[in-house]
Length: 149
Ligand code: ZN
Image 1 (cartoon, rainbow, N blue to C red):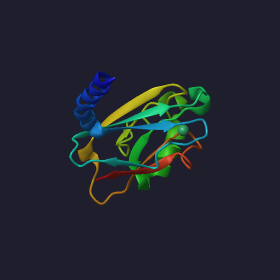
Image 2: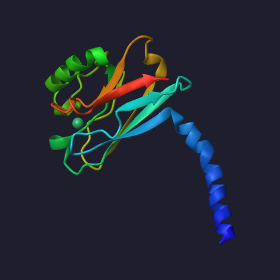
Image 3: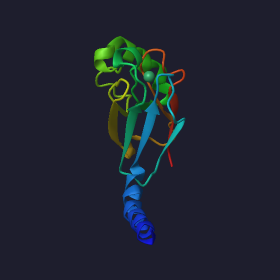
């Protein structure tokens, strides 16, 4: 018994540095109820790059309840969503090569995951950024703040 506890402690010690190294990433869950499980994401200034992973924990297919995570200036959110609706499902509801978008994941269905990695230097001082889903009608509920800390 004591040996098992010791082994678990060792595992903890081994896991700790790995966990610290993943401070430059986060996972956001999206579900069939049009919700992300996070309303804000903090990006440490010490990170060179940051990775956002979207985990669609729903069960509905991409064409019915697809989600993505788009990161962009909050001021551009509405126009990015509108242009994404025009781009359509085949383009993940994101206008191709939209230079207002810092990063975005693919649009994924239930049970799928997708990641996007971006340079933290893409965040400009004094600009408010947000993350949101551009599937039409989703962003009124599926949105949050992404903040450089
Ligand atoms: Zn969505």
